[in-house]
Image (tube, rainbow, N blue to C red; front, side):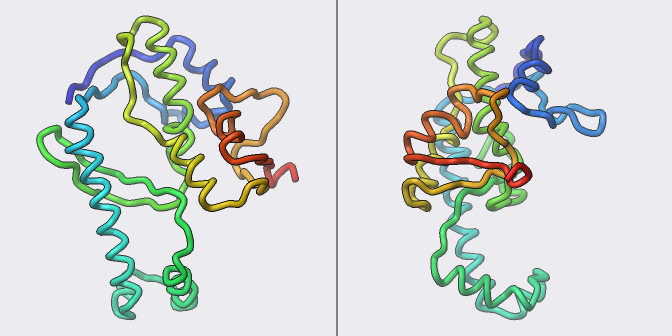
Length: 211
């Protein structure tokens, strides 16, 4: 693992505005920081990050099953009593998950360690699935990263595949974050883009605020 200073794109603010990424700065500080990158070889990604993350996800699911069988553990985790029957019923019915986000600690010397697991929350989803790919393409196109540079990032494709599993074709999806307007044309690798719509059939995404 290497930490490499590449510097931000000179037109970062304009690219963020065009993409609707309005929160790249928050509270007077940068939220999206592209001044440096981390470089890994494939074995590091597979052995130290991907495999541990897969195992951690399985262990978290085992923990959910264990907790839901114990009133004491649900008390300790402050799960509201009024919600417990609904949560247990959802778990027993095998209702679908969409995605989850791990916060991991990794020193480059051993398997990544779990700090926090955020399941089905939108934080970092757009940046990782869309804006990060645009950054890579821009950096390679400008010669600031070598040709052939890649990301271990299949989030967009995984979301398309998972949504296709969860929803029937021609389902209308409601997007609470990114209203589709004539002024904004998403780049090819963003959601909801042409690849996503083709993969799921006719998907209509609307903003509740404009509905």
